[in-house]
Amino acid sequence: MVKRTSLEKADCPVARSLDVFGDWWSLLIIRDAFLGLRRFSEFQKNIGLAKNILTVRLRALVEHGILKTVPASDGSAYQEYVLTPKGRGVFPVLVALRQWSEEFSAEGGGFPTLLVDRDKGRPVRKLELRASDGRLLGDGDTELRPNPSAKRPRRVSA
Image (cartoon, rainbow, N blue to C red; front, side, top):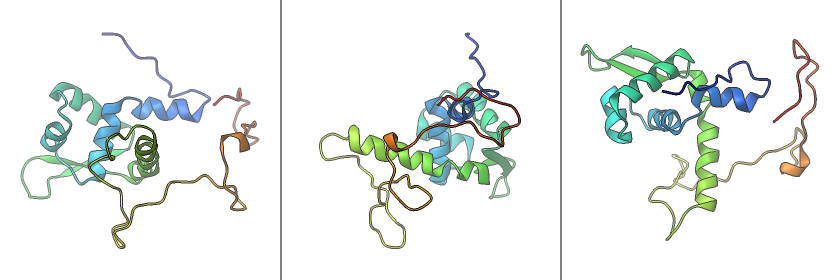
């Protein structure tokens, strides 16, 4: 088995994020946790992931503080996995990935589900990046600059 290079100390925040959930299985587990799945068997059945790989991914998500284990809600001897506040912070990332895929890879009338506002039943608007003054920003409107609050000078990279 090839050991993956750790990015946990990388200067780039995108790289550090990928170190936590840089494979599709981890993001699918987090997606399913948002959908209300809580038990190992539910994740395994829904994703179709081999038990040994699921075990490793769940353990890593717990170690990184994305999920936590709690006693089973039905009082059985099992444990359940629930999102932490840090895990709930992944929600906009999943929405952005979903919206990107809906825009660029949907075929034949789109996907079988829509992300809607629970109260109004209407589709969620596309995520937007806005400046502090409210202006809509695109990729050409931003740049990376050194962070004066950083503990040590870092090389500026994506």
